[in-house]
Image (tube, rainbow, N blue to C red; front, top):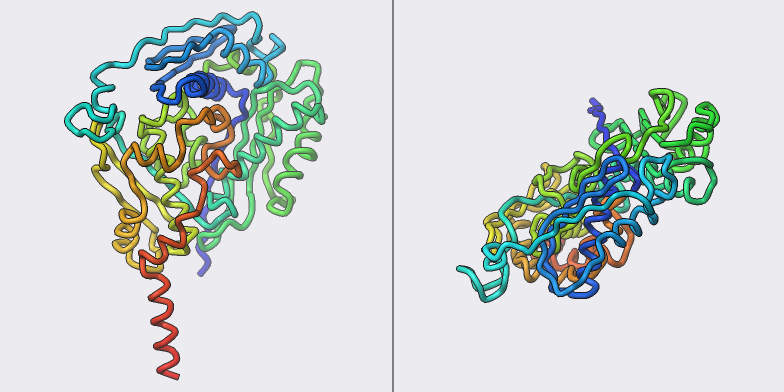
Length: 402
């Protein structure tokens, strides 16, 4: 009997209020790292009608012109018309960054605190996930949702669809049969636009130039499609909804397929394991799947503030592993150094690369700077887990029986 399930994921464009804040927070981090790679940063942001508020703590030798950086980020996103909820030139910008706590710094700095290795910047648990649903080894629903929002941004910037605002969202519902995606059953699009746009014409253009282009053979006449289902979407951006850094953590990761430890990423330097630990967990999980040790893999790491080694390492393959999970955990612990300093070094996380992670997902991206997406440890993991030896043994046994 075929098992049928449905799963839905969403994405948002870079002009969504929460994503504005994520990008500003990461722009601040990047500027600090550009001038001082040893910078520590935890920058938060709030935006509402005509205003942006920055807060948080940092330890850096860099000088960051917050006013200039905020306005530059808004302009890059596309907020150059006040009718879309905020204007990069005349919005209010407030900053309240202060120095990082010395108590936290003591636990993180190498050679200080109770653990003389570089300790984790906070306690917490992080999850990484990978599966064989897509070439990116990501869940299919979130990949399709990101492709739709990225396409909305593309047609806005190119003018292929005119009078669009930066704010937008997508949602994709997928039918699974026996654990594999079979078709898209529903698509929801919300796209900001000017009052002068005909809603009927806008829906036709989004259907043709966005949905049909991205989703292709995955949809049919039975697919439910909703575009600006309230009737219009004129009031958007920070004027329509306030935005906060770190409020789209499921959009940032796996779209709900795969658990989340609760920690946001943007604005945090890599001493914060909320970010670096989650990147490492994805790196491990992706290599496990790429090594063909499992069809699906979720890795959980946990840390204590000030302590270098993780307090736990767990691997869940949801019954899809080709060797015992205990062997995979042993292989992971042998192959990967999971201490914060090693994670930062091995993934090269002191570079100013983070602003581009802040929209369209931190995972499943083809970008050389996304080092946690590499599968360079797959062969080593296979050997450590004994998969090749097991395969050889089975071949020998088959030959003997023959």
